[in-house]
Length: 86
Ligand code: SF4
Image (cartoon, rainbow, N blue to C red; front, side, top):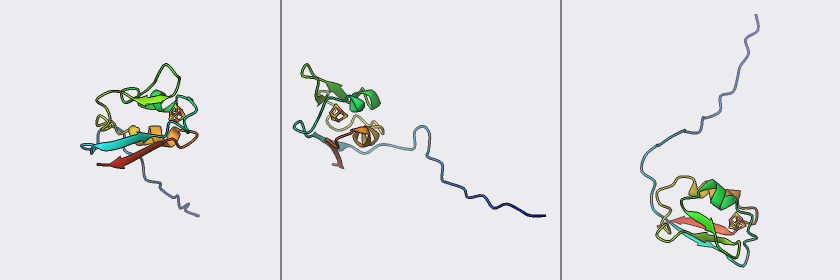
């Protein structure tokens, strides 16, 4: 009998895994093309202003504890969002 060896990939945690540390979000407005991926991914932190370009919602500059802020930055097609720990 041949036994198969399967690789097991780590599963990304779903749901809360603990407090999310405050971050500092910077948007390079000269690079933003208004694709809207950030606002779709983390709508409680990002929005698109009247110009169509991304903005951080007032009072959410620390990421609002949303773990999807980093995903939003990675989803940006032009890498216009920088997220760093405070
Ligand atoms: S995803 Fe990037 S390009 Fe699109 S609106 Fe947000 S910052 Fe701008």
